[in-house]
Image (cartoon, rainbow over all chains, first blue to last red; front, side, top):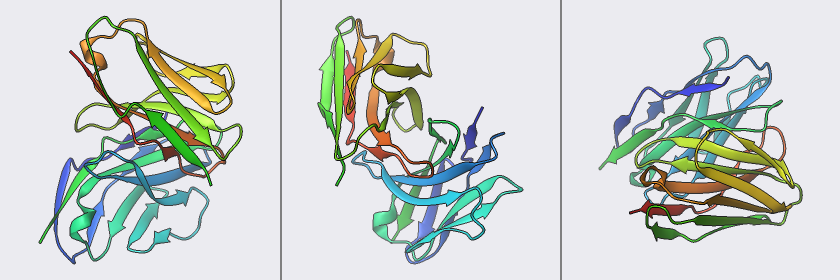
Length: 114
Length: 112
């Protein structure tokens, strides 16, 4: 069974600084994808970034990057130059390629301070 | 382009009443479809997913059911709601391996 763990219920960061949101996962599947979503107070789920288990390089999308350490089964999200609009819930998720479901972690609430 | 529609946006229902939430997808064919529930301030719990018409996988035993009468239509139902059914329900679609799920705007259900 797949399991996603986000150990930080809440995080604070000063505007313009970088922040790392932790995510570890557990799976026996050899091929899988890791995803991060942002959920603002409106409730919509916004896809941010994807990392494939066989990707050699860490994924980057603008101010978002994924620190993927396969041996440690971690996929931490790094947000650089935080903005006030980054305040939201952030969810890590995983989907095995031989499976159709996507599992989510409990989430981390990020608050950006001015 | 693909779009996903989910309605209603909010719903207040008494305990014991039936439920029907509908989700439709446009611009893609044979998508995988999903229902998730999110309790207040919590993560997403997978309820059901479907890989095709009439094919439903249930993740959590409960008084909810799902149906897929058409390729791009996914319905979440209950015959008798419980207080514990309150939450934020999200429909999503996806297809290719490695591609993200795309979510609807959600339905906030309050059972009173």
